[in-house]
Length: 232
Length: 156
Image 1 (cartoon, chains in turn yellow, red):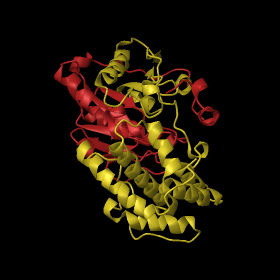
Image 2 (spheres, chains in turn green, yellow):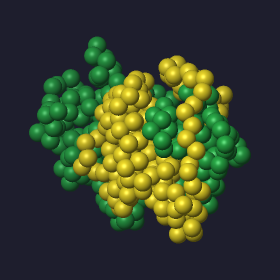
Image 3 (cartoon, each protein chain N blue to C red):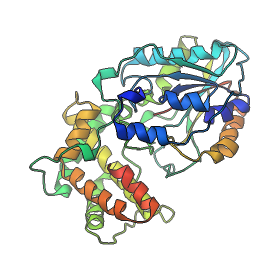
Image 4 (cartoon, each protein chain N blue to C red):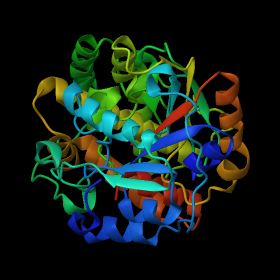
């Protein structure tokens, strides 16, 4: 849809498509369907050769004389044996014993996250809520109170960001802290490994399931939507 | 993405239920010059933006501008749907936003140049009218003004 809007303005577009069935209907002017798992548009992280092959195949479509063009990337493998879509919390059983104090656990994960930051040159997915990692204990308390049925709020929530959206950003930042911290702990871990660890073994995963439950129990579709983004 | 028949039923049904527009034809603009003489911009639907920019929210049909020289450490992703794995983007921004790969293509002379700015939208949207009628064409006009011939559209 976006490609079509740009093309109409005189820009030649070429797209990477993750869902062939959608591209067949929408008909972007040029699209390369890739058979990779969601989140892997160009193939595999830190694999410039594969990324260049995907890019080249996408750019080659620009030589076509007419369109729409929908071509399949020749590889038909899911890189690294990753599942086609992430496992969800509802399909991951909590471990028999999970740490009890999410604030303490968060303080510990922050140490690993600092290692991640040092290795990644400062790159991090953290930073949507606006609350710095050094003050994340406040976010944990806020989420605990929310899950317990209270009506907490945070001074850091911008006036134009509705509460459920802010909760979602807090949950996303919290996950980023843990996921990247886990990658520092276990550099060889896959996305699937980290996802399963998070939902099975952490106090954060346990609390976020309860945050989701409260959001999902609301009649307000915006709350339900936020819950669907926190855990499924 | 995976072939739909390889997906768990919940994901597959979510995708099949998503109302998408059905078109019979596509607008088609042929690039006026070979790739080695064209300037290219990335237009991503991965919901990327600079940290400190307003994050994308639900059903957000606006866009963010990412200067081509923005360091990777300044970029975050507020498209955080549980439908995709965030770890690849955490490890390597190029998986959705291949700025390093573009620099390599330019250095090898295969691509004329990178645009001064890239653009970012939120993906996985149900309602797209504003992108279709307003924000999409607006980005198209900006790209034209910036001398961009080609847009590479990348999802997450």
